[in-house]
Image 1 (tube, rainbow, N blue to C red):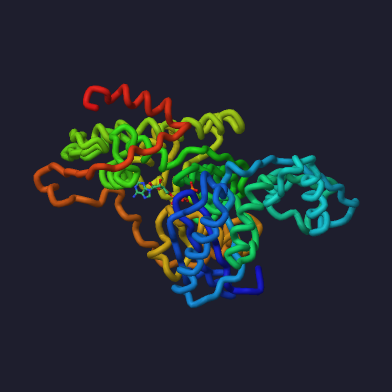
Image 2 (image 1 turned 90 degrees about the vertical axis):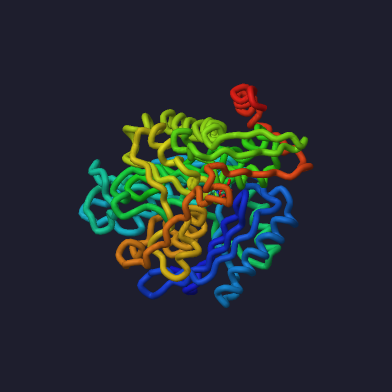
Length: 447
Ligand SMILES: Nc1ncnc2c1ncn2[C@@H]1O[C@H](COP(=O)(O)OP(=O)(O)OP(=O)(O)O)[C@@H](O)[C@H]1O
Ligand SMILES: [Mg+2]
């Protein structure tokens, strides 16, 4: 553990930049003492596209967390989106002298041998995560030190970030007057914050549904064993709605959060919205129809995850015992139901747990990665700190309901949403064109 009892996570996301300040007690428990979230600027799908604007937003986020905590932040752990990282699993071997116990040096040697794989010079290793050890063919050993054997083997999951995006991230953080304590893969951070004790004995797929990306981590008995990233997130759902309904992104975001559902059968059957388009024409749409626009995009995300796991690890149902959905976009009503249907596995929404302090502020799924950064900082070994499960944490506040609203007209069974003209037409997303076209065909009758 680091000398300083303060650990700071800086999650630089597509939609928001969040700073979380954690104070670590002697027994390893964490109190969250500061949080600052600002809308993301200068970022696109986990990469910096405007250094100045990203730096400015980072400064604001950190300053907000400093104000809450009264602590001055010097260094931070920073998330790296999975689409800017590559991961491989490599095998390492160390021979042990006869009649000698395996010691820490032997373990390091096995890991070092696994690390000695030729990597693209454009990659920078950010994690070396040993999985379980094998001693003389005996598998499933968590700590081989002190055991006897002549052959020590280990599989190591190596995660490397693409140098360019990492350099840009580091530059922004430094320009904001901070030091990068370490980069942490987004899906690893999310898993550390959300996995429950029982899931440490299983294989669980953590799916962080963000704004621009969906980061996937396969955790095998508590170790990150596989990772992937889908370049689609909640913002694409919003963009689909904006394009189909011909309303600005902000309005589409509002409609999505209030009335959206991942499954039409879960949509509020009594709600009809009145939409005023950019050109000033109005039309009505039911919440049922709204969710028929939303569902294909979420299905697409889950299908891509399925394909990725099926191709690399085998059929999802055989590989994993459960799915943990987290990230802001996991809050859309019915998302776990759709995921359950697609993966045919138990699905739950994961929120940060095992922490004290400002739990009401960081308890939602959108804070999984930022809280996970702080938990990563405790051990820097990529494992959930033991204190998370041994101490009784304060109960986390419940996630706010995805569809909170009955507004003024709800009593009549109609919830009008009036969009004032003349809003600019939302910019079409390049990778969303084909899906939007399909949706447009589905809804051409009332458009
Ligand atoms: N209550 C809600 N219902 C539905 N969607 C929501 C809700 N709250 C947030 N979202 C969606 O969550 C997404 C943002 O999630 P999150 O804050 O995890 O993203 P991020 O970390 O900034 O992005 P990324 O991880 O992709 O870089 C947005 O697309 C937003 O529409
Ligand atoms: Mg995120």
